[in-house]
Length: 172
Image (tube, rainbow, N blue to C red):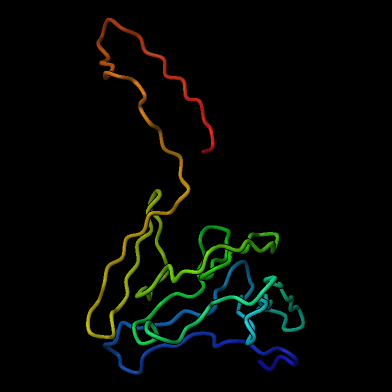
């Protein structure tokens, strides 16, 4: 597919050896669209995979620190990922309305080569470290709802007692 006027970063990269667990993920598919960071890192292209004329530029506001080079390049990393309905980059998030939220720069999924598998608030994945080993990764997806027991002593439920628990949910 040739897209006039569109200059993107790479779609992704996979190591040249069949036994190599390395894979750099630099684009994601979601709801029939391919999301890729522009070459100048100031926008994300949203490209309809069924209609090459349907291309949208999502401005990031300023250049992203997104990079697939440097120390982690040979290890395999996810530089763009799907988390639920969100597209997640190293220092930005894009929601379903294509609104961009910026955050501090990080390399959140270094050494991660597979999609993230969710179980409750946990994310699991597999990857490699400089193509020498296979890694299992576990991440905690926050924010998540949790409770804190503020009682001085534990309450023990017995057969002769009824129990009602009331939660007050507040954001801190």
